[in-house]
Image (cartoon, rainbow, N blue to C red; front, side):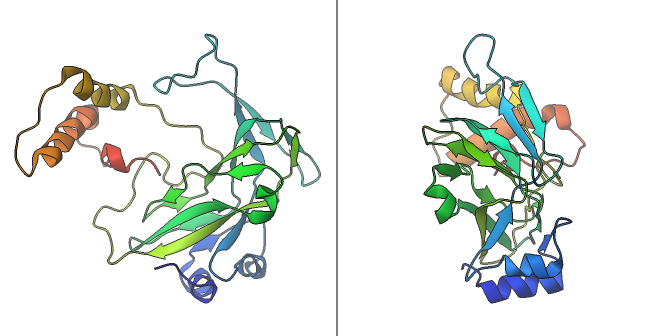
Length: 233
């Protein structure tokens, strides 16, 4: 069930569903629409530097160029067909019975700015949202801190999850580069290359998933961690 604007406003006031240092409570409430919350760009932008071998390997950590805007008048230029990471000023405090989805806004979308390609925010997440920005136009786009370029929908789960989000992005407070784990990448690949069959039973897939988790989390024994498939949103 998608929450209405009235419910979102009530949860902001009573439960601290959304917090921000960049505007007053009245300003946050004014950003709530009929069934979503408009969110605003923070000051930190990141762009991937050209890889030395000319290829982005999903299993390797990339180098980034970071731009920090000192005030609302400074600009970040997103080049034509360019891509960048940004952050919201808003901090979400999702309970265990609620997830959220990030969408672009109609106005900025019509100008060629595509926002968020990985929009699911898991129940229990706390922190700002790192946004993926893509300029699909043939001209640069000017971005400023405080610009509203995305909106968030809140959805109620049928019941509180027993495995609320506790992944690597929990409590992030700024633009965050991707977490790359060699162990995580190699586990999935090993299961494909080896071609080992899982047990031919109704629990085959589950048993395979558990085996992969055991391999992945072996270096983290004794720590409070989240299974691999719940790390990211």
